[in-house]
Length: 238
Image 1: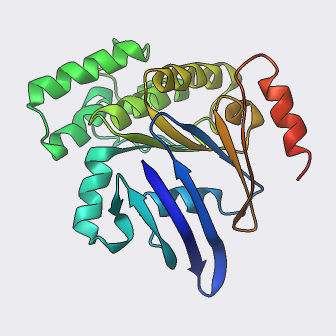
Image 2: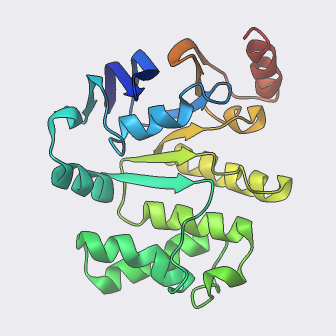
C-alpha cells in the first residue's frame, strides 16, 4: 500500500529524518516508537505528505505522492486517509455528529443521508451512540477520541494514521481505544500509530523504532499474552 524510499526531512538545516525506507502493506498494524525528538511524528506527517520531505519519495497505492501538487494531495488525504491525533481537534461550534460527518460532506463521495447513516453506525460500533447532539465540550476525553476515530473512518479510508491517540487518556479509556483499534485491524483496516507507550505499541503487529531520524530496528511480534513482555525486553536494547 505504501512504499517509503529513502526519505529525508530537514528543518532549517537540522536533519530530522535521514534516508528512511520501509513498506506498509494492506492490513498492517504498524507501531512507531522512539525517544522524544527522534522523528516519530515527523515520519507520520511526511508519509501522509502533511509535511513536505527534503528527499526521497513516498508511493501510495503505486502513486508518487512526492510529485503531486497540494490540491491533489489534499484530496487523497481527505478521501483515502484517516487521521487521529492526541487532541481530538473537533470544531467547538459543531455537535459531535456534525464533526464526524463533516469530512464526508466535504468529500462528496456519498449522499448526505448515507453519510449520516454511516456516522450513526460508526458511533454505535464505538459505543458512543446517543451523543450525536452533544456539544464536544460535554463529553469525556475517551468519548471524544472515539468520535475522532468515527470522523477518521467516515470516508472509508485505506489507512488510519494515528499520532499519540491515547496520550491524553486515562488507563480505562486507553484500553477501550486499543480494543477498538484491534477490532478495526482484524476487519482489515491498515493502521500506523505513533506512540511512546509500550502497552499501546504492543497491540501492533510490527514495531519500528526510530532513533536519530533513522529506523534503528524493526520487529514483528506474535500475538498473545507474552507480547508486551517481549516488546519491553526488546526496547531495553535501545
